[in-house]
Image (cartoon, rainbow, N blue to C red; front, side, top):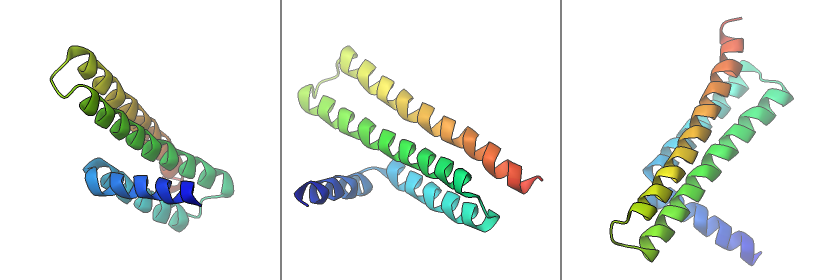
Length: 112
């Protein structure tokens, strides 16, 4: 139970501190409501939930590593900048992949 408490604390902190996380949560809610409205089948739901989970987890990993980098090296440092850029790229790739999957899934229902 203690582990769950700390995990929820981490999610709450990410919510409070990261605008992108709040935007992604909003997108997840919109995607879920739209999936329900369009009558997605169980496999489509699994894909949507998987995409949401990957994007939110990527944002949390990105935030954690950026915070760690800032703690370890508060001054501007090329190696830290490279790490932060790579993490931002990781988050961007997961978001773009989820968006492409969403376009395919939602487009299939909207344009059929």
